[in-house]
Each structure stands twice: as C-alpha cells, then as structure tokens.
Image 1 (cartoon, rainbow, N blue to C red):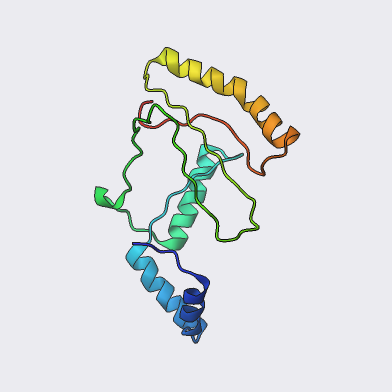
Image 2 (image 1 turned 180 degrees about the vertical axis):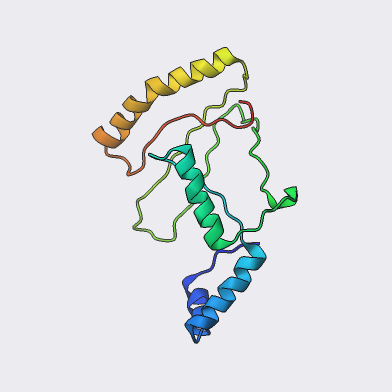
Length: 154
C-alpha cells in the first residue's frame, strides 16, 4: 500500500477541509489508529538527555506501546550479491535534470573479528581520499560519502 500522493490529490483533499478544528479532529483520528514512531538522536546529547527528549515527545504525542511483533518492520538481512556488477538505471521525466546517483557496495561474507577489523581499517583509509577526490577536486556531487554498514552479523 503506497502512501505517496501527487500534488493534485493533496490539493483536492485539502480543499475539503473547512476549518482548523475539522483538520485537528481528522489528525487525532489518524494518529490514534496508525501512529508509530522511531527515533535516532545523534549529536551532542548524553544518554540521559536523549531519553528525556524521547520521553517528552512520547508524553506530548501519546504513543501506545506496540508489543505485537507484526507491527515492527523486518530486520535487514544480508543477501548474496551477484559475482558480476549489477546496474539499475532509472530515467527521469525531466530531460534537463542532470543529477545522478551512484551506490557501490562491496560485501564481505566473513563474520570473523579479524575481517571486521580489516574492513573498519579499509573504511578509515578510503573515506577522506574518496570525499576529497569526488567532492572537492572533481565537484561531482552534493552528497558524497563512503563508509561501512553492518547487516546482520556481517
């Protein structure tokens, strides 16, 4: 089920709202039926400050704890990548849009501590030169990064 709507559909729905109280009533109904929240706090916060902030948000928005596992999304699982390169190309309906994205993933199937440490070292070695070459020198993108991501125990 998709919850992405075009501008015309949104404008049509908004034109049916006649008052702020009607909108508030509708939002409260939706909130009570389908509210779910996840939070990631990053930055200059202590654990205590982060938990206090989450508690403040939870109190203000009145979340109901969901104990049933069916409400939680499945965890990411590592999939075997093909041995050859795979390319996905998506065309843009705007012919003058020259933006592009590239995502390169190298997968390690080893779960040994030694290999995990070697991957961390490789990431640390590659990160700055990667950014410097692509973003600073070639100015190829607004968002340029490299790093590692653990999926399952890999």
